[in-house]
Image (cartoon, rainbow, N blue to C red; front, top):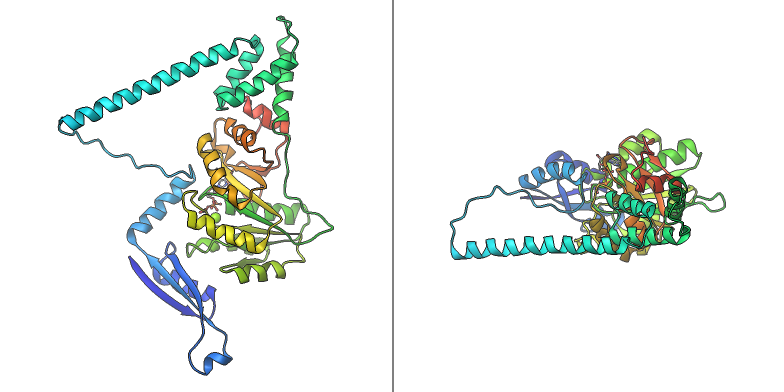
Length: 388
Ligand SMILES: Nc1nc2c(ncn2[C@@H]2O[C@H](COP(=O)(O)OP(=O)(O)OP(=O)(O)O)[C@@H](O)[C@H]2O)c(=O)[nH]1
Ligand SMILES: [Mg+2]
């Protein structure tokens, strides 16, 4: 690991120096303002010192994680080539334990299936089919069952009920669970709406910020400004700067509490100030704590959690709960173009009762972002093709 300090008149110059010497994936360990010594320090502005680290293994990891993180934000264990172990007593015991675990898992599966058969017994055939369709589309059994029961309660007991009518009732009921749709609330009466986008690494926060800024500026005629708090990696702010420069939208790279307040103050004449944040691992309390501090200082009007639908339902809910302390107002679901099923969206909305703000459907800025409508979402949960 190589660690080096860089001293310059401002952050941007210090980062430029660090980047050219240490590479794009170097990590900023610490940054501070330093007053020059002696009498000269009284009359000149403080300098900026950043401490930067770079490790060859980090470089490899960074390259790899950039590809992997896009698929899922949850750490995965690299597959290890099995090495045949000598069959000692301990190895045999381990094998036995594994076998018991496998049997327990199978028994649990069978119990669930029996439970499912038992609980779907009271449902008419079209509602049972509806339930099975939800399960196939990765809706959790308990969520699917609750929705199926409310569908059943709305249908007459008539066994000869028409399938088409039953389908309409299913769709209508499903829609009610996702009718809370709430894009960013820019209003003409109040400028300077401050919106934070937070979430795990690689889910598409920066891309979503760029898409939103471009849409608002070029399609809705709004004035937008960008702030990035992502100063963890030396090259992180460059990504958004490139978009900002192309779009002609102002961007501030912010390192401290004072700087965020200054930036927010400076952009008060804009309709919306979008804040991109560093990806936080839900396991890293320090990163979540840092984010929480910025939120306390800046007091945003909206905090949007960005989640990728390529992540498994249970992981999505775990991530939600890890970020909950920051205060989540609404959710953006990204990478719908990379998923085969969408039940995980319903699972998250069902449990959290939070509104959905947008969905994103590809890498293109600004086209691949949409405000979904509830019919479209309901049909997606049933596995119907509704998006390009
Ligand atoms: N397929 C697909 N890719 C997307 C979508 N949104 C973003 N991406 C891609 O996902 C990758 C990560 O996107 P970023 O916007 O950098 O993600 P981030 O959350 O800002 O990442 P960190 O800042 O590293 O935490 C990029 O390759 C994006 O082009 C989407 O809706 N669909
Ligand atoms: Mg980013």
